[in-house]
Image (tube, rainbow, N blue to C red; front, side, top):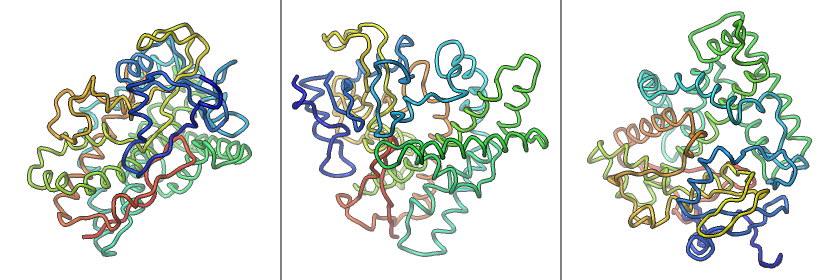
Length: 405
């Protein structure tokens, strides 16, 4: 493949809610394709389900791109989130350190423990919907519900003041840049976020509560020291970032997707048993949230779809493409809330399967159920094709989603 033939990535698309046509083309004709990233570096794009799952799950393949030969994602000097050497996270991102870290956190994010949180999440959702109704139609669902709900939830879980949500949003957006921020802005965001979390840890150490941060602080301070102070800062920063950025975007995406073809919403109104399956189909079919996903650095040769990919290659497993692979999903373009064995890759797979996915799923289910029950006449204010993508960052999603009722 000549340099001129390598397409720029992320790909352009006709409308916000539909995936780029290029993904389906590559999935059938060139399942491991060269793409040029915003940084100018070249990576391999993996578009078939089995290949993507293999790359995501294989512990031999590293998420750490701060190494010689790895592709840089963003236009900043450090190459972006995955290429940056992040103090505190090196020992908990891979291998035995990562398993140790997951064991510490996973007991907080079990389905059973998250169910205990359902009434609190429902109360927060009702309060925010009350605010939307009080202000009247039309409403910006992204600002009125999508952003504040996950922030309230993750702040309550971690033990941080929810009134700091604007800070989280700014720092997170800056740290997740592809093209929209300078290196100086990124460095400042890391410095400010780390200082904020360090102060939060000190306050919780002095006045512990029943939240996750208080428990993790006690673990850090214990004799066996299962988390260092730097690891604790990296953990809390990651929870605050991931706990609101992706779920906030997903609430807006879900609302847009079910209202874009309104029979999807009406089906949930008529049969609340379809809420869970509808959420899973939204998660499977969304292509807006992350074009980059979580890249991997291949540490030894690997064969994918009959092609040998050499060690030293950076691969981008495309969940939006894999989740529509007809080899895995019958009639993949059909939105089917009754779809069985919906093993989409939106939350990853293997050792790095998203630890917070029970919480994210619950928030989406609560929001969809609440909107269906309280605002059954809900509609998009704008035509689906007029919705706009958020661009310039690793985490995408939609710009403001306005609704009427």
